[in-house]
Length: 185
Image (cartoon, rainbow, N blue to C red; front, top):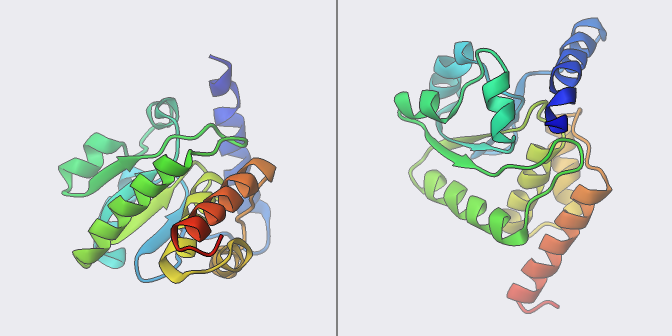
């Protein structure tokens, strides 16, 4: 119940900040040949994302109530109606992360979509923290990068991204998993 109290104020804050600041933040940014990282997509964006960005799937890092509460947000049903696959990787806003296993499963999903020549739209509410954490883990695994390298690469493409302590712990834990998996640990 309380988790929803900050949804509208923080969404409004992000929209207002973008309107008032001299340099506007893009709603989404292409990170690499597969990942497009962004904020909560609206129905009016579906055609653009599919046609311009070749989106074949979505990794949604919001909780279900966030999708239901925001008017005109694109939910799983809307995406599937347009032939776009959907993967839910729910995380609590601001402080939320995902388990290593959940991240690995989502990365496997992204890999399957990429093998078909399609891109994946990864989003949370603002496209700054939860989705950026997942994209960081994806780039670490895909490119063999350390967490700071992957995150800085994303930050060049999408300057508004920020990871908190909880997200950095998750990213570093994922790095230890990758090191162990490849025999570097």
